[in-house]
Image (cartoon, rainbow, N blue to C red):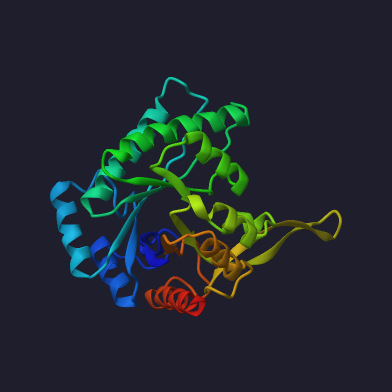
Length: 294
């Protein structure tokens, strides 16, 4: 497994410290990561901002830092805005993913992480599943032109369960479309992570990880002079301190033959705050956890 650091961790998106991409590349190398995963949107790797000259300069910076892996992260939603069919939302998003595949190749990378779609009330689930299949098939063909593989993360509603994700990839049936199987959503749903990871490993090329503790939430009900229970929220904590059984997850992946990239992300408010020092502490704890696995 190759540990890499996700730039969203240093994007300022949740009030945490923000680094530009050059600073982030240097930070990943300084911390001891072997590569980077770059968010394909502002404030980082938006296609609107990174022309060929800037991409060439960024590639030189990545290579000078000694980083060997580059993954680009798309933030697509293939089922967006089904209420307004006159807007070619799927075409827009396919074009965006194709742009990111071109950018990934220019940076020396070979993977673009993509999502599926959030379930939309305007259409039945199965129809949206097939819609996502069609989008991924076209994106895969376009990514293949640049020698890039799509890594589909089980993050959005469509195919969030590992069995559904396997069904989805088999329906897409393209060698340049694989899984970016993630432990977080299966763990929240009570799935055995070792079993799921072992089943998904042969088609998984990438995974993104973060650890969480569940914090109970309640709403005061004055008429009952009591509280009603709400859905717990996930509090990001250092690797190994949360409820996700990552040892079973990685054991399952490795038993199934996985040897891809593992991106660490800090994509929600961290325990301890958003200072640069705390971000670095969490990132280092991830690397120590990876070392402990071997």
